[in-house]
Amino acid sequence: MPTYSSQFPDPIALVTVATKTRTNVMTVGWASPVSSKPPILMVSVAPRRFTHDLILEAGEFGLSILANDQKKLSELAGTLTGSKVDKLAKPEFETFDAEKIRAPLIKGARAWFECTLHSHQTVGDHTVFYGAVLKTRVDETKSPLVLFHRRYYALGEERGVYP
Ligand SMILES: Cc1cc2nc3c(=O)[nH]c(=O)nc-3n(C[C@H](O)[C@H](O)[C@H](O)COP(=O)(O)O)c2cc1C
Image 1: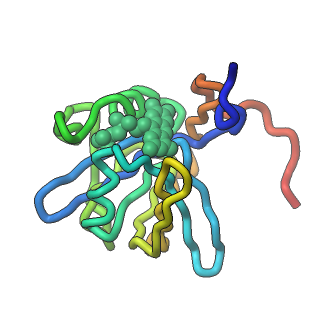
Image 2: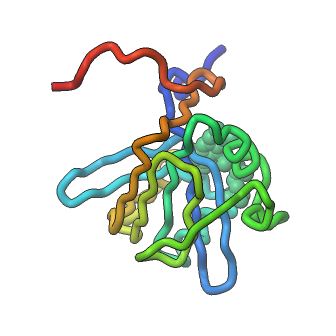
């Protein structure tokens, strides 16, 4: 029986976070813009994720929307936990310094957002973290990685332009 959530095509993104003592990365499919002015986005993170309390402690986080050739990074960041493994020390993760936040960002991605924590809210079994976007970067040459019904995809054919 498919879950309700698997019917939503998800952009696959990596949340990065750094406190004074720890840096970590985790995969999210549940990430979305929620306000244009001011720019605010959300990521939904289960409390048992190691990343969860790091975001609360750091008060900021980075979000790198993965490119469609970065499935391996989604699998690594989304199956290993920072409570046991220093994922960002793995050679697969190439990072660069953010400008406004302590957390690094993931090289080769489609887009990057540097966020300060605006607010957070418990919603069912997840915590929704709202991030006020301090800086956005985009690599227009890359196309995003998408998850739908538990499978990874690159975007398909264009069907028209949003007016
Ligand atoms: C494709 C994919 C999407 C995921 N989306 C989410 C998500 O939106 N929210 C969440 O809490 N966990 C999500 N996860 C699970 C976490 O990424 C995973 O539990 C990870 O190991 C947590 O790392 P951490 O313990 O270092 O924070 C996803 C995993 C994958 C592979």
